[in-house]
Picture 1 (tube, rainbow over the protein chains, first blue to last red):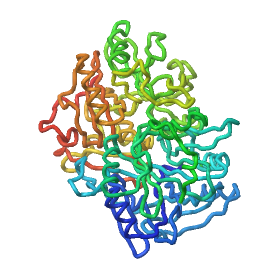
Picture 2: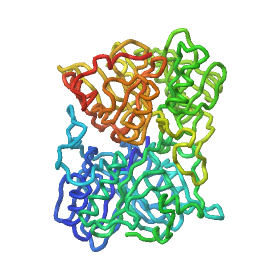
Picture 3: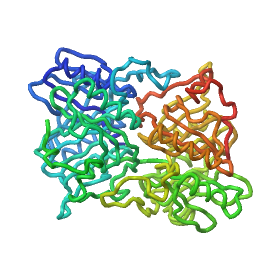
Picture 4: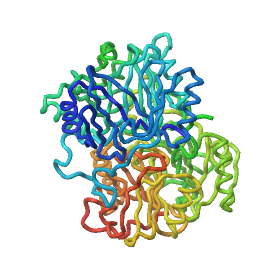
Length: 308
Length: 318
């Protein structure tokens, strides 16, 4: 079997209380539980213990990326493949990460840590699992109506090596890519489900997090999100509400109190979850400003170097 | 050993037979009223697709004396998947037919076909010709093509519904033999019997790939296409009405069952269509928990907004 979804992101934050306020009260995630040093949150339409894990730390950034597999035996298969590819595998025992079964961790060529796991403790959707209303009560969850974690963008000095690793080991496919004038991929959007991207990578120093994104069901909810951010003095990216030419999705970038870039995103786009089944869309450097910011049609490539 | 995405990957197409001489009404409806693209008209069949689909077709219609669902096509990874599924289905004493490339349908690679309990024929394949995205592969705009603007022009086929005289048996086959997951199900009030289920192999897309409802064997309940969001569905509904399309009495509504925003209506020959948006993310995982409905909550399940249940809603269409 295979990787079935981006399961969670473990982030580093400097002020845990401020971060919890941001991810719970502003973005609208549900706090499953917290300790002195960690907080575990999930979306209203997620049934696993956490899709966001906040770690109190001296700096901001990515602690690890959690991909969930569909069969327990996938972990052993993955370990074999990863070891064969020359990467070291670390074993995480059940419960070492709260709300999760045993896992393996390894580094991508670009140095970010990936964690593969099979089991997460289950919780009902916020509206329950029995005859649930399709909407929440007013004020039940504050802020943006985001339903779940959607994707992340990481930085890499070698897109091709990273992409090949994700494809060959974890069966990720490419939906779209940015290609330079020499035809070399500079950024790729990868999927492990039938969506446009579960993880993307762009040029920058190894190890960085460019942004993490949450899904809302419609464009009005993205507009609403920008309203919420401005009203609550959440730092937003210059262009505010915008659209990506890459994917055609509607979006807003903003920042958590530690400076980790977030995104609220929507845009239906279906792929077949087999690498190479459909040829990728290619963006060239000349058109990429429209690919990044469709309405504004301008892009400072330094954007990709602004990482935590 | 590999960590590959295998088995049924996605709903590929619906193939319907309609009492529609020269396919005049259905071609006009799906091209002019809905805003699909006709890839080709050949061998007495129209091959239609949505603008955000790179594949040859997601809807095939041919002329038959009586309206009927001919088959539902699902894409798998490769021949190995076809072989494995052939073995699993044959193991249930169900006959599996193989077809070579371009024999079942134009542009379809090798395939297997079999009838599921409930009577519908499924065809599994791993290759379908791709004319490609009409918006192109080079820095595209990802906008509805100009010639389709002002029509609903849905992005892609997203699910279909079928009926079965024994839904529990059909659902068990789909889950046990074809390894579909269950996103939601409706049980009798005593909890002993399953009346309906929303089944999936995909993670995304209006919450399911295949819905099973109680009803006549071998029938199609509806086909559903994805729109961007509620507002687009409202807009599409207005264009459909202006074109004289028969809209289901629910109108645009929130459908709690599947957590979508939906609009149901009928084509000129009687196939029930749905435009939908939303749905949760599903996981093909033994621990994934489905949402459970009881029959007593059927009205809310089918429409969160309407006060009155549409008793005719569960009637299959072809």
